[in-house]
Amino acid sequence: MSQTRTIMIECLRYDPEQDQAPHYRTYEVPFTDEMSVLEGLQYIKDHLDGSLTFRWSCRMAICGSCGCMVNHQPILSCQSFLRDYYPARIRVEPLEHFPIVKDLVIDQSDFLGKLESVTPYLVPAQPLTPEDGPNLQTPRQIEDYLGYAQCINCLLCYAACPQYGLNNAFTGPAALALLARYNADSRDAGQKTRMEVVNAEEGVWGCTLVGLCSEVCPKHVDPARAINRNKINSTQDYFLRFLAPFGRGS
Amino acid sequence: MTPAPKTYVRPMNRWWMRHPAYRRYLLREGTSVMVAAYALFLLAGMVCLVLGETAFNLWRGFLQSPVSVIFHLAALAAFAFHAWTWFKVMPLTTPPLRFRGRPVPDRMIFRAALWAWGIASLVLLVLAMRFL
Amino acid sequence: MRTRSHEPIVWSLFGAGGVFAALLGTMLVLIIGILVPMGLGFGPDAMHYDSLRSLFGHPLPALGLAVVISLFLFHGAHRIYHTLHDLGIPASKRMMLACYGSAAAGSGVALLLAGMLVVF
Image 1 (cartoon, one colour):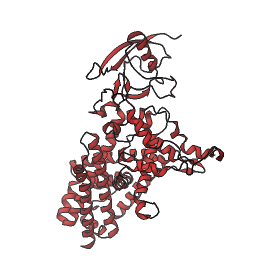
Image 2 (tube, each protein chain N blue to C red; image 1 turned 180 degrees about the horizontal axis):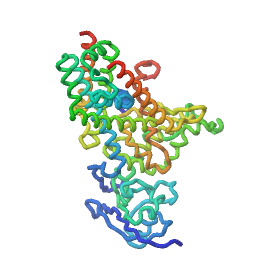
Image 3 (cartoon, each protein chain N blue to C red; image 1 turned 45 degrees about the vertical axis):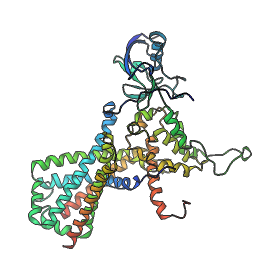
Image 4 (spheres, one colour; image 1 turned 120 degrees about the vertical axis):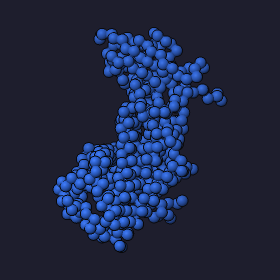
């Protein structure tokens, strides 16, 4: 058992039934070397203030529920350790750019709508039945999309994206990365529907390549790459329709 | 249906103070002011060249002044920072490249771009020494 | 149905300008502003009126200079337009017109001057 030290955790508090605006409360939290920020928050809830509200589930960086801001850096609280911040105090806030429901809990409904808008599932060229058998892929074909498929919808990338904060209409990093993921899949034939989302002002053109989305992603999805490659595709699509006006149906 | 809960939306004022990456981003974008300013400076040179020798010698004479040296040093820093950051993010925009079946790593693209920068600069310098 | 953005037009010009600025910008500034005025590698007659008139009397150098100026202007206009939005000045039709309009006007002037240098 490692020795116990005490860290100051300054936490944003907001109670929609009481407060007009959020405020901060500081807690003295005893911690050991193996304790994560999430466990620090759980200590507060169990021992200091039962009203502190936050989301969490798996404690192993796969469910994507426990994202929050620590010292203005979007992180998964289960994956960040108190020992790495000590002796400085830490400031814990809900994910940036989302409306706060209560304390560290944000309203994700805007993202869920955006996720739906990118057709985030395989669209087969012809309807398939179980009798058609498995839809085989080569390792090379899997490689084309596997990186983008690691997204756990934790929303750290949205909290890192000032363009989303400045204009909520922007489809945003994770949704556009998942769009690229399905477009890159050899089993998919839904590119045409998704291209409409890509080409829109709120699509890839809402991005100015700040690049922090890719840096904060705990699963190395690299949304900045997905979006900026689609800028090239969107530009080709924009100009090529003048060259081949009869080949494209519309 | 239950009514939407009352939520609090935080303002975005001075958002660049929140993360060093945001300030680096604004610095990168800020180089464009210098790029545009330098284009206008070259355009002024073109105007003077068309107007005649007296006008052009004014523009040419300005190059010797301390103001010009400061302006050019600032422009040099801006263009160099622009080039560095431009090449750094270039692999994000290029379509997936493969060499002998393997994806080309980002640092190879960056290095190739730096070589292109050096070669282009050298060619420009040689041409300038030959023709100016 | 979402409306298609016309951003590819200005983004292409921005990108081309960015490449030119990255590859040639530093050396261009170094030659014109530092090496020639200080006489480093260049004689006192470098960038003299007569030599530049004869150089830009040829269509290729004249057009090349105009294109570089034009692309630099579009590169600047594009980033300035978006950065103003980042800094809290909302993007508007008027702002767009001011940014890209002045780049287009500058490009027009540059091409006109290039033509005059070649013809006269």
